[in-house]
Image 1 (cartoon, rainbow, N blue to C red):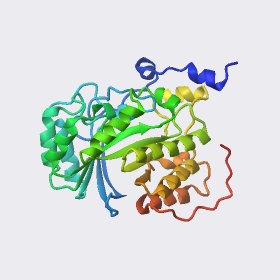
Image 2: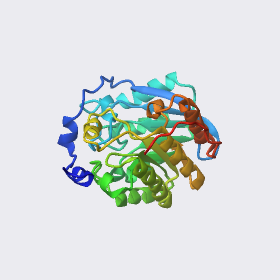
Image 3: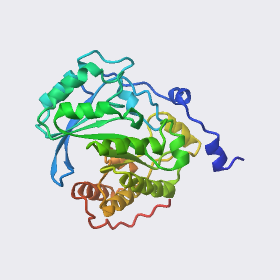
Length: 321
């Protein structure tokens, strides 16, 4: 019977394998964002302010990462010229006024097949007057376009990039087509030119057990801050894209525990090297204890906003790693 190392070595996820595991996409309207909301966030200047998040509908990302489920809300073809500005305006017309805007497009802002380049100047005009704009992009698509967009915005620009993990085996198997050197190069290019970087870090990606997931998320935060990242976001790896369910049946993936996310957030906050947030979307599903679930989630919300440790939650629940 093969051991775990042999089982991991036998898996070589590529585009064709990942695509074969997928369920159907959700229908989206190319003239409307598929989601938008405002939430409180601690900004880089230490204030707690409203941040508007607009989730744009556009063509699927060409980097088909093993753990990604954002493709569920994408189109098969590039959206028509003018559609992305219309989506942004749609959301702005319906959201409370905010000085901080996240434009998340399920992929890469500077992928010309996702955001038509001709739309970028109009997008910049729509957002003139805000303090901060946050976009997402793959490290290999970081170049002078970021700087041109920042100048057109006349606002602070932050680029969010998926670091995912510094674990060498897990990162290589995510089909991300990125090395740590790629991420470091992109980060240093942006920070040298006055653009802040936000890093997405996975808690317990495939091929790691619970203890390894916690340890490597901490190491990933260390790496991110060492190269100049300003903000780290810890994302518990979620099933739901088909590929992770397939790996789960083979014992190669399991979602992390709520307490593990709490531990990594504590570690990051204590570093005092930059903002650290726990991603709390649909977070209750990661808890195994009905008694302390809501208290733990509220504790992490408080730490996200305050960026200081708050008293731990006492509970009799015990779970093995």
